[in-house]
Length: 216
Image 1: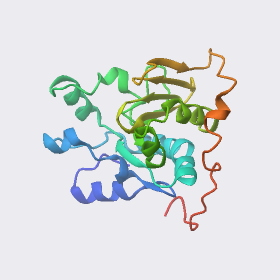
Image 2: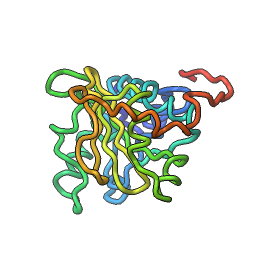
Image 3: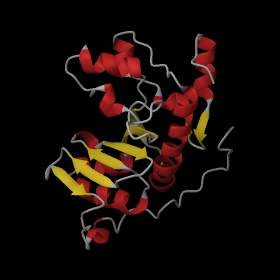
């Protein structure tokens, strides 16, 4: 697929379905892009779609089928938009393109040739409990045990997290919420009592939605 050169081609790209619950359009919104009138259009739509499907099917679909609808805070950034956000926008909330390949920039592989994609997500079911005082680590350990991810970063507002899928995952969880820093990775022994933290969570993937095609 060529890079969209018309608004109708961009419409068609947005209609591409990544999974039963997500189309590509769900991940194209950008506050930086909207405010500064900068387009968010991929250079390599085929790679973007492939990475996005892996992210949706491995990480996001299990959330929807367990907790119900989730909020997509931000998703894909084109190389041009991410570079603008990293160099021209204040406060700066984008890191350099080199750090975002196979992450926010879905349509570029990283320096090791790995494909990946990242999205910021809030789970309303958990956010309400977190805002009432629940520990973010309850959700973190649930994700650790149930989701096929590369890396997760937690943030203080609504326990939002950057959920990152990538080839050759490291299964790492870090946080800007106290206790800050690294909670888990493949070199750390996980908390043996972690299962008690989420004993009251809904059954995994127990929500049954009307059957729809993943490609329609």
